[in-house]
Length: 349
Ligand SMILES: NC(=O)c1ccc[n+]([C@@H]2O[C@H](COP(=O)([O-])OP(=O)(O)OC[C@H]3O[C@@H](n4cnc5c(N)ncnc54)[C@H](O)[C@@H]3O)[C@@H](O)[C@H]2O)c1
Ligand SMILES: [Zn+2]
Image (cartoon, rainbow, N blue to C red; front, top):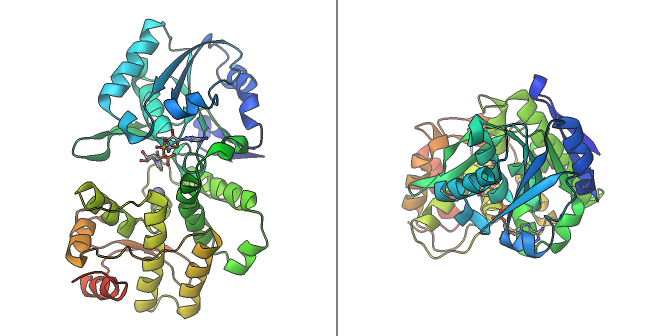
């Protein structure tokens, strides 16, 4: 199935389904006809599994980076770009990323800056990569002071989401992606009963389509793209505490599940939804094998402090909250209600 991201002359296709990677050579020939060399960027685990061994139809140079966010640094970007330059990758050539969100963020950023910008095609090999990171053109690396602080918008020419990649993904990485898929089901206002009638692959495709629709409507996050932050206000706060050194093993998607459940309680407390709405959030998370309970022992003051510092919080407490017309961005959520609900969820005062 092909989903189109509509961005005028920068529109592109997201191809989904088993075997989607095998259309890479024809995709390159059609979207980058002047290319003669392909710079493949991948990570160690993905390379060991052979997933980057995909036919490009052209000569190639492969650069392997470490797995995970350790690859998202300026020094790795420099190393990759230097390697591509040594092989004389030209501005007519194309970069292909094969890996998780860390690889598409790094590779997309290199593509945005190498020779002042060359074409990139993403082959996301994780569920997070497929439903989120590889679509939308946000690229970048981390700085010692924080995640994703150094980057650029650079839309790909195509994204090939091959179901086959997911067969080797560890269960924890699948759960990580399900956090975002659950978020999309809730943004679509699907009932948990409806979810039960649909195969998971349809729900994943639906999440990809939602991301494509939202990016088409709001490329740079001035409006509806902010809805994709559903569940993320608290999730980012929990992740900030982890970066600050608390001992907690939580993946982003698991933190999003906690944030979604919290947002449901917040929406109920503010009279935006009723208890059935809260129950639908719980049942939706359950459908994806997620719990959404606040991890025990977190200090309420630290969570609230981290939320206040979140760059997306716009100086007050902003949440995406469900309501009569579905989830909306709600600014000025009262601090005392947040504190009360964090305590009710088991947060420590
Ligand atoms: N640009 C965006 O809009 C956006 C959106 C969401 C997330 N992100 C970024 O994406 C990153 C997270 O992405 P992620 O969750 O994909 O993590 P990841 O890229 O770190 O990959 C997770 C792990 O899975 C391994 N892996 C990848 N594909 C595999 C496969 N098919 N089989 C087995 N193992 C495989 C990787 O090597 C890695 O060890 C973060 O850096 C985050 O900031 C960006
Ligand atoms: Zn997320």
